[in-house]
Amino acid sequence: MIYLNLLIASLFILFYAIFSGRTDKSILSGPVLALIIGAIFGPLFLNIAEVTLENEEYKLMAELALALVLFSDASNTNFMVLKRNRVLPIRLLLIGLPLTILFGTAIGFMIFNDFSWVEIAILATMLAPTDAALGKAVVTNTAIPDKIREALNVESGLNDGISVPILFLFMAIFTSESGTELGSLPGFHFFVEEIGIGLLAGLLITSIVMVIAHYSNMHKWITQSWKPIIIIALTISCFTTAQLAGGSGFIACFAGGFFYGTLSDKYKFDSNLIESAEGFGDSMSLITWLIFGAFIIPRFMHSFDPHAALYAILSLTIIRIIPVLMSLAKTGLLLREKLFIGWFGPRGLATIVFAIIVLDISLPHGETITTTVVYTILLSVVLHGITANPFIKLLNKKK
Image 1 (spheres, rainbow, N blue to C red):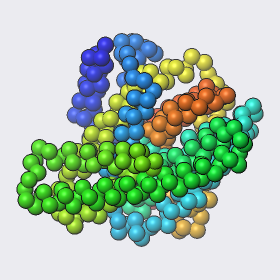
Image 2 (image 1 turned 45 degrees about the vertical axis):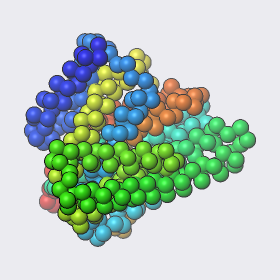
Image 3 (image 1 turned 90 degrees about the vertical axis):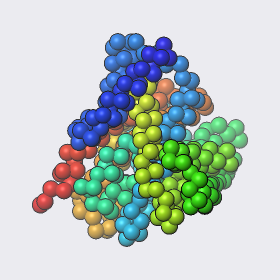
Image 4 (image 1 turned 120 degrees about the horizontal axis):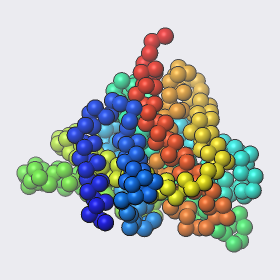
């Protein structure tokens, strides 16, 4: 069966690559197509594919796919535009993200009456980060004003890393046998360590590797065939170093990619190298969505949960959009620009990773929480995928 699975995955990626230029301009994004193909070959329809991945292995695949996307997106950051408009991502991260978790928790109380507050807070945190991979169609589209693209790029690059320690803070509270206060203290220290160690690991590994690679490149020691591997290996090194040291691998990858972007011009490194890592990351993302469509979604489609569906819809709309509007007040953006930023907060790989992490602590309402997460991700992939290009045209439509 493993060869059949590989055949399905390889043929899908092959044909998607061949028609990627055409597909990217249509309403059917790569993740949407991956979900459809996964559903067709999975238990929902043909039932000819079979997965042997454990939760931990699937989590690692999603993590590495997200890490590669974060590194490549950060390295392509337009620093001049970001410097002029840095207030936008700062507000989205420091005001919008906490408000999103707060709104998600408050609305969760109204929908899930029998949940504890910490369960609702965990759910709200799991659904707060936006996905750089799913948002790729937006942040790479030059038809969108630079300031909006860079704001969404930086936000999606950092909010998942920031959400990790917040999630662990609530998990520490839940699992603490001594009460909330004792559980909060280690959670706060973990929050600081995750961000600090993640930043340090990403900057340190990238700077060391870039200096060595520059020296080797100057002496023409790097063969052409190995050049594309450098970015992939560098990304994984940033991620794993941060994770092993107790930091956020996602923040490490975004910080490392950002730093790589500043050093590549200085060291006159091949600007095309990042495209190889980008393509590899995109391929891993598509495989992750294939598995999600084939084997994750069917587990939660045997019965419909109206409360989970309602929360999923609200999570993609008012729980996301209202905090964005509040955080971007008095920034000079037009209302349609703020609404555009608010709408394009897709949930994807980071939320999948969070869901697998939370499964390990056996929450009393874990099944409902996981169902809500799956509903939200499924709606996000479909709705954000099919609205990307039409909404970009609306954004650029003159008054």
